[in-house]
Amino acid sequence: MKKESFVLRGGIAFSESQNSIITYYRGYLVCVDGICKGAFTELPEEYKGLPLYDYGERLIIPGMTDLHVHAPQYSFRGIGMDAELLEWLSTYTFPEEAKYSNMDYARHAYAFFTADLRRCFTTRAVVFGTLHNEATIELMNQLEETGLITYVGKVNMDRNGGAGLEEESAETSLEHTRKWLEAIEDKYVNTKPILTPRFIPSCSDELMKGLGKLSAEKDLRIQSHLSENHSEIAWVKELVPESTCYANAYEMFDTMGTPERPTIMAHCVHSDEREMEILKKHGAYIAHCADSNMNLTSGIAPIRKFLDYGINIGLATDVAAGSSMNMVKTMLITLQASKMYYRLVDQNVKPLTFEEVFYLATAGGGSYFGKVGTFKPGYDFDALVIDDSKMFSMRDMSIRERIERMCYNDADAFIKDKFVKGKKVFTAID
Ligand code: GUN
Ligand code: FE
Image (cartoon, rainbow, N blue to C red; front, top):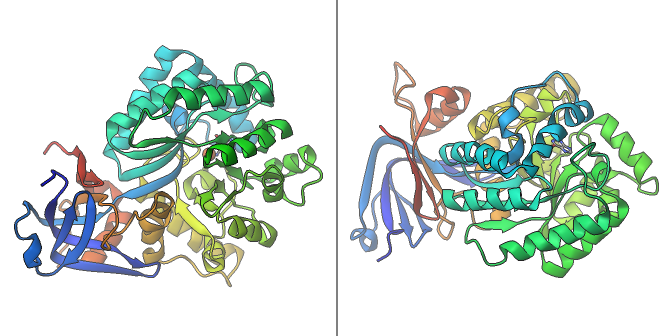
């Protein structure tokens, strides 16, 4: 029997659907060869021979997916937050990313990023690197070591990057991308490449078209940014005047993907019905980045509308526009943002519930990786064991109440153990 077969016992919670969380007090959670066999009140006879790890009163929840995070921005998170998007990019972000041409810098900075990612609530992530091949490969090497499962993109940008952060031409950018893909072919088990045109203002029409073709040719997924900020949207209209909207510009270049090869679009703060239709038609995922959207004064994405319309959605930190990689904090800001959208913007758009936000952080984003993000039979066994014993209470609380408190009081909930596909990838030192 493999090491990835065992039973965990504890306070289990996971999404049964978008609107319901199922819980088990002192329940059993079975993992066989890295796959979840389900949660049980009584341990079925057939699993009684497996090693059992009893976590007592600890909580056991599915791992979380961070659907959009910029690894090279980790080192300046929390700085420059009075700027809006375009000023923030040119003043802080692009000069910082330019430093990743220096491999000593990249190695050192990425070690801090990967160490934090290993420790936090995230078990899967979709990550931006920089435009530099060597530094992006270093990032992928380090991520592979963590045991987390990730997509990582070498960024494409052949215009408007300023000094030191621009590829010479579309041709050069495409050639670098092919070389990067060749260099990492068959190199990793858990780390996959994803094509990463930064956003339309960074990529010429020719580059976008080339990436659209490459995506189809090599069956590679794409990630980018969409409709984050009003000035950005107006700029895209100037750059691609024949497009009917920002999402249509991506569509024109065949970079919106297909349901089998879904594109991730970060933000969609200002996406209207036209963009919703395009996103849905292509089976795209929206990476909702509430913390980032607050920090850069971008706005609040109407996630309730997107959910009701049937668009795929996951949550994301968007470090460094989002200031931390803590997905539980991201859940909280998502809830608070949706409440303010309802109160201040449109009272026809009801706030997201805790059930929905828990679902988005686990199963919603997880579905981008396949059967991931819940403890139903057949799902990959990605799990977090949480110690909330420091969260003082005078009364007994249900598991459901405890995970809601974990979200609203994240500083008092600690990760004890973290599993990805049944492998323990992190354990806290008691
Ligand atoms: N749009 C283009 N690049 C970026 C980035 O690095 N962060 C955010 N938040 N938006 C972007
Ligand atoms: Fe981003």
